[in-house]
Image (cartoon, rainbow, N blue to C red):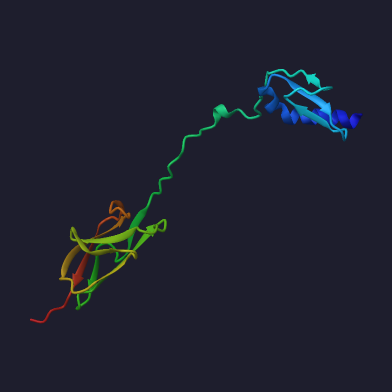
Length: 170
């Protein structure tokens, strides 16, 4: 008897959402003695009284939650690590080695380009190391820029001034 009562309570709790939508529910025992619930009457079935009120109590106050999507903005930084600012480079072949650092590590599709004396030098590349050959002697201003896959500059280094000294024979 106790087992049947537990079964009835369990079935009612499981069927509550379904039963709330219908107006009448009937229960009876089948040939094997199991309880059967239905919205159609059958001979010998009893009608179960169901209230249509459903009370839902949330355990968490969701009014304080911020559900607006956040755009994670990555702040990239580019710096020239070599040569030092105002460095004098002595190279008779006119070579200048430029090394930079990008933080955080840039994503696929991003590239670094070199600006020397206000003009773009060569094609943007996936590395931040540049080797310049046969550069004229004198003062040169260098700058690195990080560009995204749409070609937009998203970070740039401070401009550095370097001096190239090339010995010449008169």
